[in-house]
Length: 416
Picture (cartoon, rainbow, N blue to C red):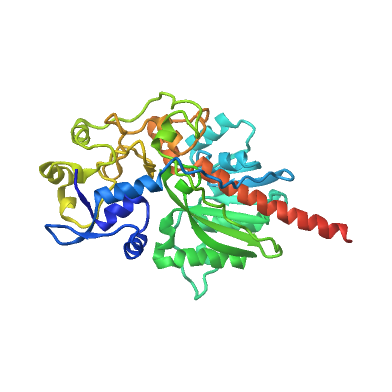
C-alpha cells in the first residue's frame, strides 16, 4: 500500500476540500510533508488514517436533533420525483405528498407500487398544468437538472429560461403559489456556466415573487447517511412571508458502510440478499488486488499502467477508480451504473459491486421500498435519488418553518 497521498487523494479520502486541507496544514491539524523521491508536498497515509479515525469515531455522542413535530397537516407537491428518495424523507418528517410528477415510467411504477395512495402524474412536466393546486399546497420541491440558459438580457428572466426544466419548475411555482419552494441539485451547479446558471435561477425566483435563502451545500454524511454525497439546496420563500427558513443542523456522528449493511443504529437487521451487477473477469482480476479503502494506486505499477491506460500519466488522484470501500468509512457517492470504470465502489470483502439492496441501504431507503424495472433501471433510480435520511432532515426544517408561519398567521387573525 502506498505510504503517501497527494493533496487531491487525501481530500477525497477525508471528504474535505483541498482548501480545507491547506488550512489544516497551517493550523497543524494535518501536516503535509515532502515526499522523499519527488519532493512534492504530500500527506503520510498513516497521518490521514489517524485523522479519519477521529473524524469517524463512532463513540462520539450525537446530541443533535432536528426533529420537529407538525402542528397541522402540511402538503407538498414534488416535481422530478424519481424513485421517491426525497418524497419518502419528507413523508417521514410528517409532510403529505398531494402529487408527484415524474417522466421515467419505471420510477413512476416504483412510486405507485410502494405508495398506491400517492397521486403520481406520469409524463413530461411540460404537458401538465398545476393551476388546480393554486393556494392549496404549502411546499413545492424538485430536483431539476442544471441546463444552460439563453441570456437575452443583462438580467435573466423567466422567459430566458424557456426550454429548460428549471423554467418548468419556476412555472409550476408561479401557478401554485406555495409558501415555500425547495430545489435540489448537484454541487456542480455552483460552477455551471461559471456560476451564471445558479444566479439566473435566483433571479427568476425573485422575479416570480420569492426571496431566495442563501443556498447551501448539504453533505449527506452529516445527516445520518453513510455516503459522501453532496446536494445543493435552493430555497425560495414567498415575499409576503416574514418567517425565516433555517437549514437542518449537521449531526456529529458519521455513519459508515458497516452501519448501512449490518444491524445497528440505522437498520435493525442485516441487509437483505438481492440481485446485483458483476464485474467482467479482467476487472475482477484487478480489483482482487485492491485492499479495503484502497484504489488503483495500491496496485502493482505494471497493473496500474495497463488498467488506467492514458489516464495513468495525467494529473489528479482519480480516487474513484478501482476503489474498494472499507467497512469503517462512508461509501463514496453512488452512481447510476455500479460497474463503470471511472466510479467503481467495490464491496469490502467480496470483489463485486454493491447489490440492489446494498445500494438502497447506502441511500437509506427502507428495506420494504421496492424498485421496478430491470436491474439496470433499479440501479439508475437508486443512484439518482436524494438519500431518504437527508430528505427527512430537510423535511424537519420545512415543518419548523411552516409551524412558525401558521402560528404567526393565527396570532394575527386573533387580533382582528
